[in-house]
Picture 1 (spheres, helix red, strand yellow):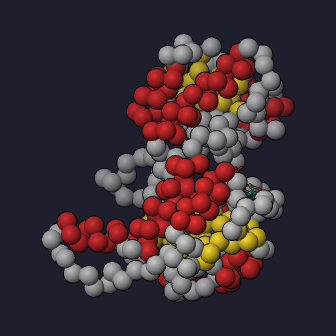
Picture 2 (cartoon, protein in one colour; picture 1 turned 45 degrees about the vertical axis):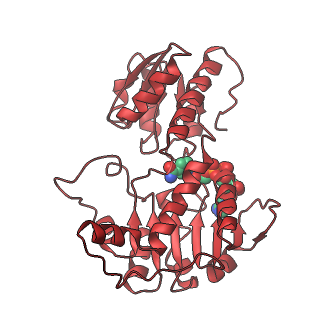
Length: 326
Ligand code: NAI
């Protein structure tokens, strides 16, 4: 089996090479993301392996099909960037890595939250310049605060456990509520109104695009903090920026951004960015942005490469695809 990985970085190659010792596949690593413009680079591949900012739409899938690709093996949990029904209609199943380390993402969301509430990015820059003043660095205890957890799946539940450790009150919203000790479910309106921190752990779907928008932002406390480690388009960035500028919201920490494709995972330090909304968000003192790195731990990368190659092995052996997107 020949597998072509798109949108790869040195750390992807390192972990896939290690995992492939047990599989022995012919793996090709491409740096560009998969899209209709790059799909011809899959020529000769049995399997393509896209990542979160690839665009696997109908045009791309048509080219993959004409190149003889038989399987799309996402090396991510999310698959909102793939037209899965169309791929299947062209005879190409889509598999993914549904769980690799919920701890990686949940822990990153708390790293962001702590950095935001304790103004660590400002403190770090100050002490590097031997400025030991504390003015403007007054933070907030997490203990006793209400955290609104949107999505109580694998990552959300790890986040809930972490929040319990901080002594927070936990409110949750999920269309499929679970029974989790110490967690009270509420409707989304109530959660947004009562939470000091709103943190998102749900997939992006057609129904929840811009879940956080001008109207829902208006429902939130003007001191509330928003953490998003799920998918950028869950938040209307323009509306968030407006709320931040007008001080109708306390701050935001974002690992994802709705227009991140083509920007995140690249070094643009020599030319700046054309996206004015992102540039303005980055410039705000109460905003922290990381470049979709929630998953980026040794443990997660190891699990991603092992599960991806196991998914390919199931396909090769004609077995039922346990991680197929239906
Ligand atoms: P999961 O499938 O275990 O849980 C998702 C939960 O969200 C489910 O309980 C589901 O019922 C709920 N949900 C669905 N629609 C909802 C809505 N409109 N409002 C509230 N809840 C809703 O998924 P998991 O593993 O917890 O991952 C969650 C998301 O995290 C992924 O879909 C992906 O977008 C994102 N992610 C981000 C990463 C990063 O590096 N920043 C890495 C991995 C995942």
